[in-house]
Length: 173
Image 1 (cartoon, helix red, strand yellow):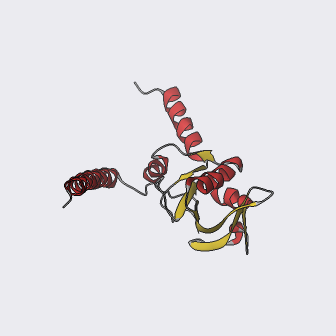
Image 2 (spheres, rainbow, N blue to C red):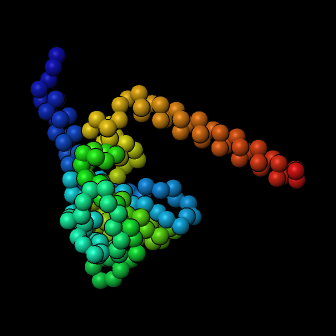
Image 3 (cartoon, rainbow, N blue to C red):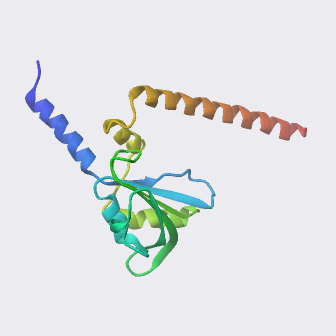
């Protein structure tokens, strides 16, 4: 039998889940020249604007623009950055999304993420950006399954190629 209280409970959980503004490191945790911090949710632009110092406030920029400036912690600049602003619904998640392109290396990347989290974002769970894209109708189930299979095939291919390369190097070919 259909339970109204259970439906309301599930509906409330979805709303509170989707009301959170989330942030995470969007690039692989490897040595690289650039790292990206992604922020998604209704407060994404507000949170990013509070830690960004640039020519104009991120609250005033047009959607799908890249803005040069600095991320600061209130007392000092953390890093020189490029910030992309993508306003809902024209983003991956269907929500307001901000991507902060900072210098690579985990020290700077984590410092930028920490500033964003202290400004009010919640740490995203694994797969949460994709989950939001699905729940907001940006991805369908077939696309999700196809993407997952492609990623798995790519991982297997990399593993096989890496194993093959390792053997060739070991043998001295």
